[in-house]
Image (cartoon, rainbow, N blue to C red):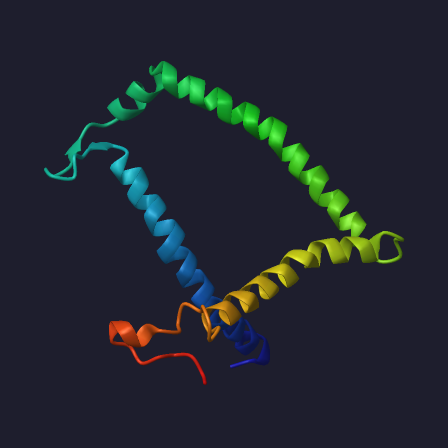
Length: 147
């Protein structure tokens, strides 16, 4: 086996788990969905093939076209807002900008607050005077408070 062929085979072996994942969790469900779209299945009785009747009913339904219009409007309005907002946030944390430190602090504050609140909750749980875990011996659990 040549070195080039061995390198290609190694690459394919590295890709195999990802390809399998895509096939199992994307391609197979998609194929099942397409197959089921041509049936009438109540989940109690076996599926009955109906051909293109489901699509014909969908295309003649006014609610389908209304919801498709709302989806289109939402996509046209929200996508540019999200793209521009993401770009502006990226510019705020980009190197060599004067506001970089403030932006990083603002982004990191929720992480610090979450850690602080969690720590305080545990301190209060085990407080010897009024903690929730103190006095659990009355319900048959060994008292959890130190001291």
